[in-house]
Image 1: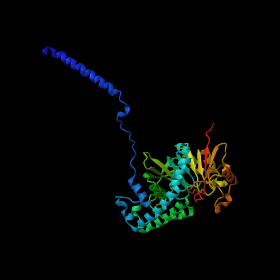
Image 2: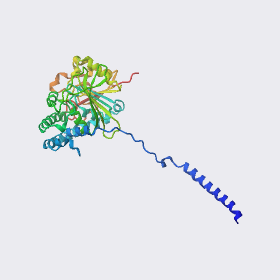
Image 3: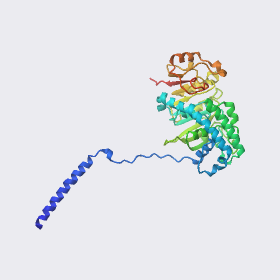
Image 4: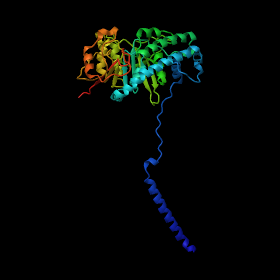
Length: 399
């Protein structure tokens, strides 16, 4: 009997070997989806929590567990500001921002795919509507004549100063949210408080309301070669004058739910023909990182209908792949249809009274024939829903 054991063990080993081979063969043919693959996790540098919280306080938004701002947020003045400003902004989102965003998604699909730089001359600090129409852009370049300003030290503001700030901000933002544009003279007066001055607080407020996270805010200027140079501010909030370039601010931020850092610039400069060097510098800066530029024009005071703004008009036509505007932007007679494809939206009747002399007969005829129909939000000076016009010019690819 014991002599037979080796043979028996051999049989067992052979059976086990065959079984294991069959199991391994079956295991190798299992479908790939049975395997667990760890997803790739993209990392984003930590945002600046103090800057982001500061922007929320300026925007009248609640903040938690931050004793640095209790001096302001515990006061009745701030609670009143929070309530009034919140109502103004909610109406703006419902009547203007959201409809514009929905219109953009439907009508600008190709633009969103290609244009990552938004150039917004004559727009001042209007980040919110640029963001509503172009939410996928990587770079926003805003320009105006208003001072840049500084990051305000809200934690040290007296109640009296905050009262002045909140009154002025509500005044400016009520105009903006109702009409979709700022009135320059009003804004210059409203942004004149030494402790909270310039357009930077407005841009920060708009970003906070869009749930944007702030990573860094850097005062800069552009030299004649369009290089960004860091500059300093005086402690009293008056911009320093240690340079001869174009004064500006760089804001690095990340959008809600996104895993990358984008950037917004504001530059204070004159874009008339009296400043040819500034126009050339901005042109160079546009193409530092991107050759696909969409120019955004709205409530632009019909400046480019005058010869004193011919250089900035030429620069826009030369360097833009897309132009989105109302009738206050580039006159339609300047658009060469062998270079540009034109799409017209809304209605065109005549400009508002103060600009009645800028009526364009050619545009009236074009709209009568080719308009793609009304849109139900205000855009430009015709801020009543259903009365506005938008033109989209897209440059044809060179053959």
